[in-house]
Picture 1: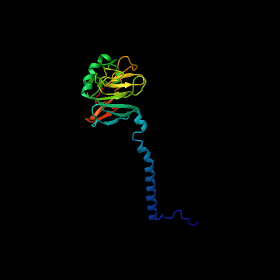
Picture 2: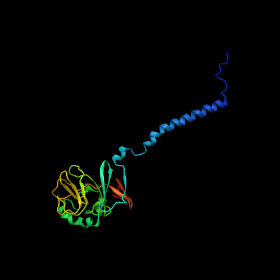
Picture 3: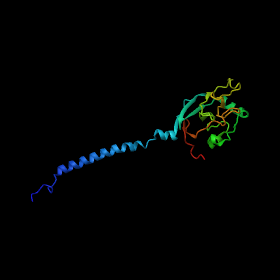
Picture 4: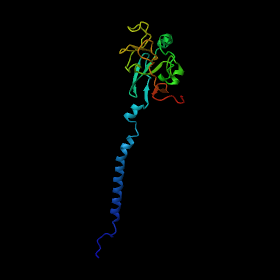
Length: 206
């Protein structure tokens, strides 16, 4: 039977060329396949909405100023309180529904233990979820200590124009307003003197 060439030795140079080409094509294909997988390691928008931590630089924050971030689809207020505001907070206890922050659902335990009246880790920096606990409206900040149409003895705080709820500069709710509880303090800690991490408790916190 005539030799049909099936058993002919393959040219060595051609074999090396085919092997190299196959390896390159395979590597390129693997590279394209790996791109979506590698991207999946990065936090998606859905993961961030579910609670991925958010960092905030507060180095430029001045007395009475507010920085607004978003975490879990909620506005987070970071406010630097003046000494006058801090001095006024203890004088409001008799007008508030929960002055000692006894409702454990409204703030992490480490915040309440640090100071139930200030409701903050650092005295001058307040961190709050900016949603009224009545129907979820976003109150207005009125940080100055001066008479207001809704309170002639106003010591600074938050006023919800929708249903007239009022909160002091620690987010504590006044008596006789629709909002049932204090504004919520989210979990947070300080990575350094000027950086707050929203969404993560301090290391070792219970």
